[in-house]
Length: 364
Image 1 (cartoon, rainbow, N blue to C red):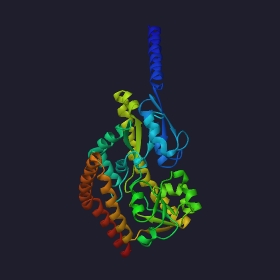
Image 2 (image 1 turned 60 degrees about the vertical axis):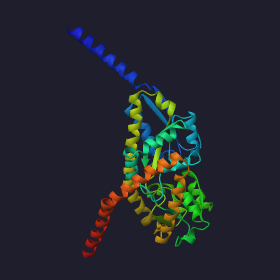
Image 3 (image 1 turned 30 degrees about the vertical axis):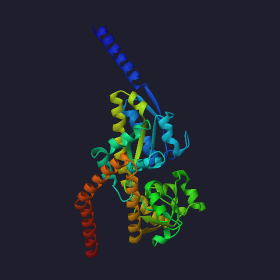
Image 4 (image 1 turned 135 degrees about the vertical axis):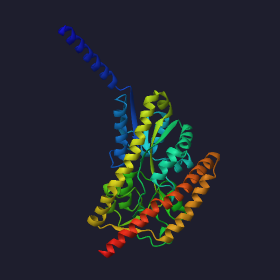
């Protein structure tokens, strides 16, 4: 009796082991191409985290190998690579693809527009993701938010910006709608991938560059190439990093794996924002205290001019076609509601916190 029980138990264990082995065997082997340097903090590691999470959540049924910018395709060719099926997945940001569709930029960030938290609200509960999905379907892609940097810094400059006149002739790496705004202010926008920024700034090929914020800018050593570090990041108040999946590949997945891919993107989207929130303060302190970076606020007059030009650029973008009009209307409706709420919630709270902290410091 004991022998039969042992044999039965051993047989069950062997069967279970075989089932686990079959379960762990990859059913889908994907390539993910990115616009970021391999394993670059925040952005590159965010892509790696997404690939790892998809593998873990799928029990190994989907295996994703990540390629940094230039490893499989150049940084700004990942959109076409995923659309063609050269890679099953990509990680970048939608403002890089304005050559494909001008309105795509709105799904990345808008100057003086929605913050990260507000962008997530629009995406997941305000109709933004549905519009984005409709747009990308025409290119054979399925998009998803897969990271956010939060409010960025205004950038690194080799000269002081004291007035709008200082923007005249300024060669600056700045993508998306922010680049068009700079152009109308008299500057020259240049679109470069992250891996080329330091050399371009150091050599004088450009006069200024924005990248992300202290965490990433410290990692790139941009403080070695420029003296002045300006804020706020008017051009990118809440930049979404995107995952894009080849539509045919995505639709060939069973429903459970589709859900796993999309929910993995949601997890990484939230985690990246949390990482930047945690890492930026310490990195900024290092830049200022250890590398003598001169932290500067853009003059109010400069911000006011940039805001006026931003309104013009976005309005023109919205008027291009029916889909752009529909998307802009959705964005603007959400922005109006978000501003009304944030004005009596976060903004008022932050102002009160700063004011009361200052009073406490003065009394100490």
